Image 1 (cartoon, rainbow, N blue to C red):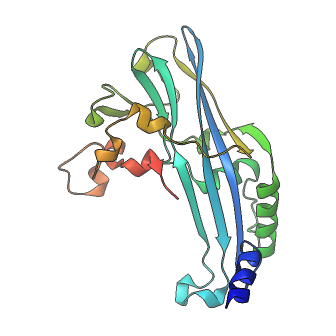
Image 2: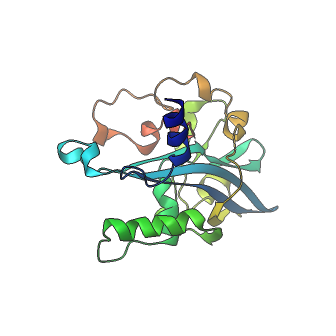
Amino acid sequence: MALLAGLMLTLAGCDMFGFRTWSWHQKLTVTVETPEGPRSGSAVSAARFQMTPKWSGVGDSAGASNSSLSGEAVVVDLGDGRYLFALLKGYNEFTGRLAFFPLPQKPLNKEEDAAVYDQLEALRATKELPRELTPLLVTFADIDDPASVARVDPDDLAAHFGEGYALSSITLAITDETVTKGRVEAVLGWLGDIKGRIKPTDKKYADELDVEETLYSIDFVRGS
């Protein structure tokens, strides 16, 4: 049993019994132009993707892939108690894949897809995110009031922060840097006390909800 356990640990992460797993770190950096000059914030998240063999599932779940992203939102301190957050909502483990290896018109087979993840895992590069991959941006009218959360239009930061404020760039890097922790909680001290939606609502149907009413704490901080 000890020998078997050692063998299992040795083979962890390898192409074992048809399971293939990749992991990498994604660093998201947001830069905002302000009247006082550029302000930036960044966060490093851990991404994981696993292909599973068909024998590991039943019915439609046979051969389904597993993926995850753990980390925190980007916080940009704009001064005077004002912050811009780039959330994990709209940003995930596939953002890095799509940023560096856009999906081709012809679907890839499993081996071709695996080759892309081999390249992604080994990649160390930075590029600006295309607009369609921009994560959800929000701010708080009152940083101490969760219900004051408001969506920010990436093309109109001035609507919330005033003249002279504009989104300069959002870049994504595949990096060896360690996952960042505690930056969001340092600003949003109340986040750990939130059990439901960030902005409570009495609306009954999902299609009635504003974007702000769909947010939870996991959109700001997500564990492994």
